[in-house]
Image (cartoon, rainbow, N blue to C red; front, side):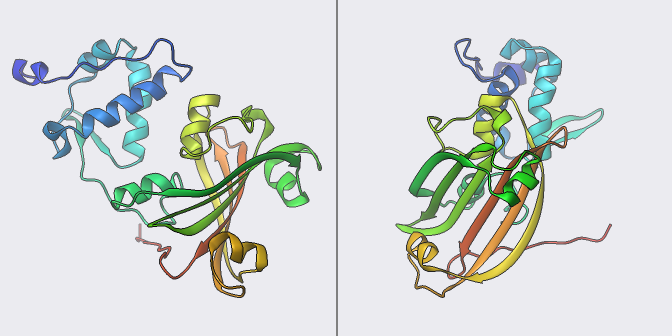
Length: 252
């Protein structure tokens, strides 16, 4: 790396008072870095030694943060060349299960929260099976209605595994898996999905501001962490008038 490139590296400071793990803090600082004009158009990032020294973390911790951004398609790493910022991809709803909010932000859409409720209740049978816990185990259930331009679009109901340690006092306005990562140091890694169609019943019609009987897309998913342990069972209902889920398949 040239001396000129090094001089452009901004000051990146972790918060020693934060409860978030170092790799999570580093990841957020790297996100800020790659949005800077000098990097956002495909430039190489500073080398790992420079970045880890600037952040005051080990290279292993830095690599954990970088790997997350590589997995999201924000960065590209090539042996002997370095780590390059790549042009963001507009992801489909199916492929972007990690964050509805972040996906919409990538499209220039500001997500609004119309309803939010977190409560503890006994796990229904299908939830207990998905989370691999005993029937009627108390779990945190989080209901969220989100949309944009003053209109609700999606209803999320998430049942969270007790081992996450989350409570109704946490801020569920932020992206769920980012909250889990920051508070429980657990990474959402895999999602098993099932899609069906349904007609809006009276409660769902009220939540999504549609007429009873309106066609909705129902998405059921079980999310696992990196150890293949379940962390969430979710039921998601989408309005179909302004929102579509697409799937892009490639051979090989």
